[in-house]
Length: 72
Image (cartoon, rainbow, N blue to C red; front, side, top):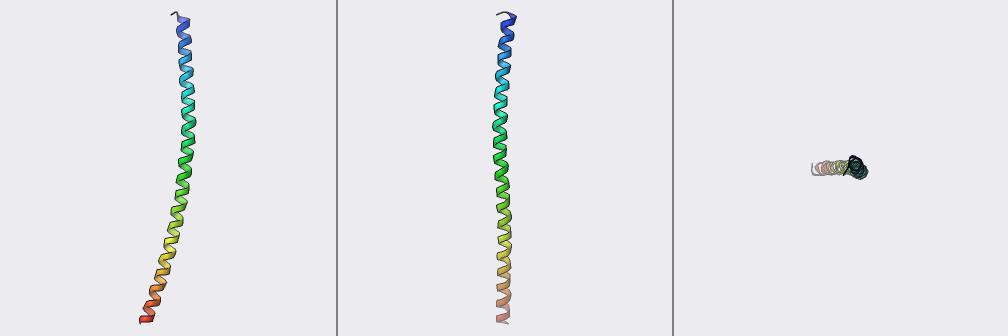
């Protein structure tokens, strides 16, 4: 194998590695976008859950005050 053949083989190897890296980056960016979207959706759901829990706690507090007044 002469130097030109070695250089050609090396060039092909580098091109293959570069293509694989490009594909990996594209897959990573897609997956990162999916994970980011899921985190944001989950964050919104957690925030809504917190609001609902506070509302339920307020209703329970109002009922407790009402029962206290009725018992008193």
